[in-house]
Image (cartoon, rainbow, N blue to C red; front, side):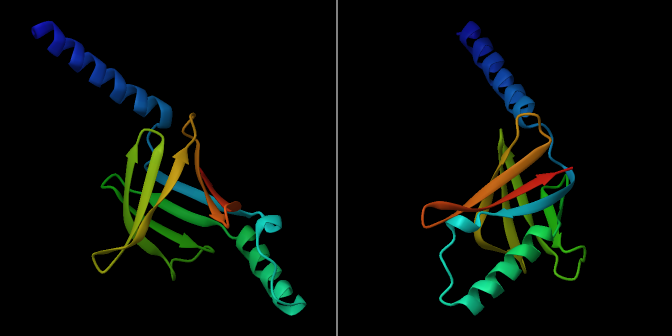
Amino acid sequence: MKNSLKVGVIVFSLAALFSLAIAGPVTGVWHGHIKVFRQNLPAAPNPQAQAQMNTMIQKQEQMVVNLTLKADHTFTVSMGGTDKNSQTGTWAQTGASLSLQGVVNGKKMGTPQVFVVAKNGKSFAMTQKVGGKDAATVTFSR
């Protein structure tokens, strides 16, 4: 019995170390960029609407998303270099999976956004789909 307990503790410890080695610590300041896959988006109903959509996508792709992941497992995110429209929430990491959950007035908003942390720990990304196709990827790096 004692040996199986020791083996269990060793396996658990190795698994914990392995999960940290895969993803690394994520606390700190990150800068995100959005890449939109225009070819996978549905067409706008008319040329004017398509032009507006193209302008909006271009602005999104030029925008920098600033994300601060704090040691207390809360985060602040702002877009466009201003804190005027900042949002807050909580985050959790399990291995290479990083979840961000928006919080407003103490209530969780929507579903958590799940990112995949790169093996080297230098970036993490999430791809959103529309109609089963990749629509946009948000990638954060330091």
